[in-house]
Length: 296
Image 1 (cartoon, rainbow, N blue to C red):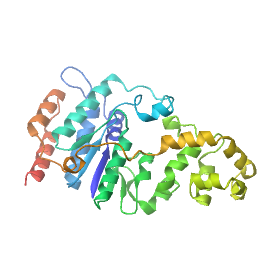
Image 2: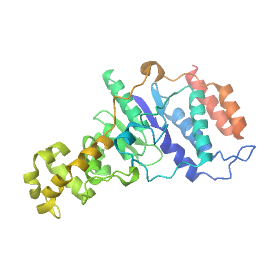
Image 3: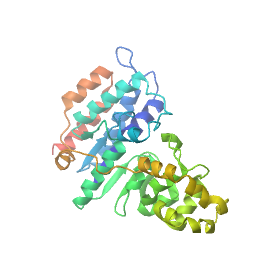
């Protein structure tokens, strides 16, 4: 089993949940850093993975999806400057912990995780995707796990429909139909989550829906009689959205097999970061315990 962590989820969670009066010696907030370090330390102690990577988002304006649709994620406010600084500190901590950290200006963390899932499958290794982002659930196959760490817990393939409404392989199609307000993807006008779910349960995929527009009226959903015409009119919107919602599992990653294997933490680098951030002994002792595990 390999463990693939969506870093942004846990950095943002820490930033908005930890007290903002946690500051370094110069008065800079370190709440996101502290929360992320505690999360990652807890994870390493609890799981002691043989294969692990932490994926970071590098840019929301230069990735390939904004080439396709410039309004992609344009509804989001830029990250505050004090959070941007902490993102880089979180990457420093990940490196100091001896863990693979990946990012790419042309691909999002989701794509890099997808590429590593495929890398593992080629070697007969299943994956646990550590996130709470619904988009990443599309990567889950029968031997994989979606783990909302400190949230819903572990969700296996068979449990995905109960949580997200459709099967993993239908999630990208579902978002293409219903749209995704979080990422500013409009989808098909007038097709909401209930209708999108009903269509996919009936036909199985976006491709099969469009191959059977003359049968859409059979679906037990409000407005079914006019739904086929609506889908036909907005096929371009559905196709565009589908190019955005699918994870690009062909994102390039160098030396994946070697990098996935955790190394012993660099306690000197960790303590130097903690000195800068004015972080006390509890997390330092945790780093020492993790070091003991990987130095055996």
